[in-house]
Image 1: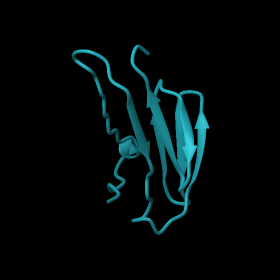
Image 2 (image 1 turned 120 degrees about the vertical axis):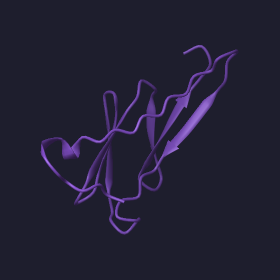
Image 3 (image 1 turned 90 degrees about the vertical axis):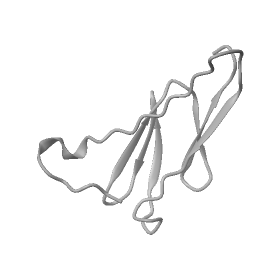
Image 4 (image 1 turned 135 degrees about the vertical axis):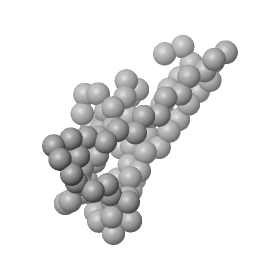
Length: 85
């Protein structure tokens, strides 16, 4: 559900997810596929140097990562993280 817009900082909301292996190594794959307006609004995705931008007519979302990304079907992105990187 969209947050109400109040004041100057209203459009700066952050959600942070961090994955850390505490012992050993693991291969990690994550798919990010936002659905704007409860999947009623279409959106475009573009890769940028440090992540991806998702834009719909009424809203934008940015994803920041050091992992390489690829665009997948349905307007999402996939990140691969291999052991030792």
